Length: 101
Length: 242
Image (cartoon, rainbow over all chains, first blue to last red; front, top):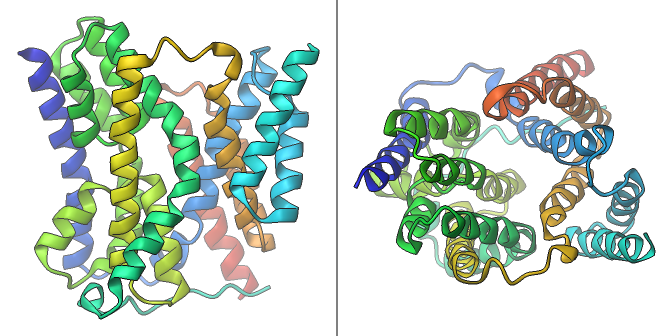
């Protein structure tokens, strides 16, 4: 029973965060600098996630894809502008290097 | 160097326009590439629940209520280890604090919408739905609300299916497939597509460096600190440019 209660309360907490901020912003005008700032949320958070998920495991001696795989993925997406194609390319490089290694 | 922002949120009843069905389908289709990267994480969540001897129903309910992969993963691990309710709830909430940034960013587009829309839309607010919704709202193409809900529906269905598959079959996929790297590489591809101005390059550089330096902060706090730092730098750079 405590497991169900924990999940229910955790879900309620997440919903309070989501709906609370939306309601707050709905009722109060945002400062003029805020909306332009929101354009930087996605690139900032994506860069942070990539640093944590890709670079940190490599430098700490983990088993992550090499910087070469990340470079290949970057090169493909820069040329093709397609995340799916770039992802497929990166995974192929990982599998090939895994087989070679 | 110039940056253009959409300063006028869409009208409140935009989702009721004729043709909004197609916008919903467009949103669902836009989510498809994301699903390739997200499905493995959902399967890991399901497999984690099974490994911790938690029922499939618990795993699925965590998906419906928490709807945040890393937070779900941590919650299921904690529950499996017998952690207390307070510890689980506090951890999940802390790991979801970045939702405040997403919510405050997308809320101006939802201003004036009916309560039922904001209840539904905010309940499925997470990084992929925010990114796709924000992209549509800023494009000025209209149908943003339907597009957002279509993308969210596709994500929610796929997310729960992935959890179910992971809970039932999680042990079958061989580790040599390296599915754990699908999501990071996909996020990298999404990032690169957004680096089209020098401002964005600076923002990404700051976000990456700060997250790397702060990676040891508890509860994934490094990414939150990195995002705030990057946004602050972006504002400074944009002001200087203008």
